[in-house]
Image 1 (cartoon, each protein chain N blue to C red):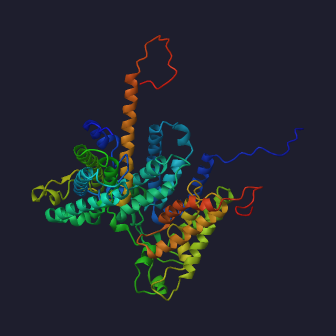
Image 2 (image 1 turned 45 degrees about the vertical axis):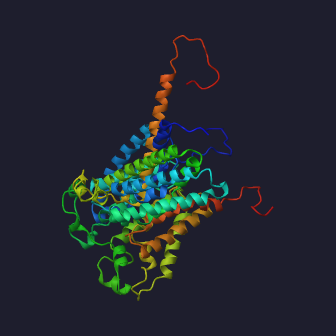
Length: 237
Length: 342
């Protein structure tokens, strides 16, 4: 199987096949912890790390794993990586570890990770797999961040609160209060808000895609005035 | 003298959407008048402001969706949604509360799901629930009824309150449903006798408001805007639940059947909310189940839940169940055997 180029992998991970808003995988953490930017970033980094580790490891052993036992093997690798990141977070950002709670161990069951392991790393060499893990994780993190920012802004009227949980005490004053005297819009922070805002993000992506498609067609179809040639088959590109 | 003999079948002029909506709007009049009499003109201000917002949102959504604006604005459906929502809102709510509620009802609950006739949830109740879980403080502040206060605000003051002027807390009083829910340790008979908010059956003012909505609902029934199944099932189920669990010598039981029938939004919900033809069950048998489900849910959430009234939550949960109910209550097609009979 031919390995896709890095450019292709990047576009896939970040846009065309984005794990969060196109594949709609890993919705559980996406919906549960994106109440604020710091939560979203913490979970995004953790997921990205696990994706890279598991993709690399799976790709390394791809030629010695029997097909029948591949899924248990992958899950064990993923679980090991998740345990690592859990211990790391416990050591370096304990408060965030407490806030994320059950959703850190739950990364093990995140479909994005198993999906990439089985769908990509199993069939490709180590370096492309590592890169695929990184870019898929980045795509996931970007969506988490966007959602976190939207929900935090709508819910509390401020952005980047409590960033010191992740970046140390120096980040304690990063909080941006955009609307002073804001009535907290609780719905945005509660779980239904996650569904609603995810829906809006998907709609926005579809809108941009449709617009890009329209422009591409407008560019590719210069019909000469008075042309008598009529094309009857195939799509005009 | 006309010699034209007309035999059956006669052409039948079915009610158009606009006619139905206009009838519903007129039927809310008694209830709105009762609300205005007891709680001041705040509800009128809400309805007027909410109606403006609703028309704007409707026009915006139709424009974005590339649909004709005129016919949909003229069918009163947006106005009915906003009016029903504004009746449910506390009077003297700040303008942004009305705005967010109406906008989420029209834009999210109605148009994102496909517009008139496609919404699986009752838009007015979606707007109400959005507000209730987002702004619980503002949503639970009801003005005291006229008989318990001599400071019912005038029209001018009501408009000022809409723009946030004047103190908000000073004029509120716990509704009877709140009192019942927060009651701990007092026997119900004692609570009824000593608290001024409780009237003959329900709360002071509330019983008249509910009777007025009942009158409007009966008129709609007479005009055949909806069938009797859902409202009757809901009221019966609610009354049965209340009767089963009522004990006036206890402090832990819910209120009496009459109290539940004539409190909060019971009658308003029974005749104006759950009869929404789009989001309720379709067949008559389905409507009976749908209404009864709402009645039971209302009682459960009122007595056991944390929110002041339960109609909105009960209606939304039953909306979820409506397709399921429809699936199991499909009427037999004439000439076909019942399923499993053949």
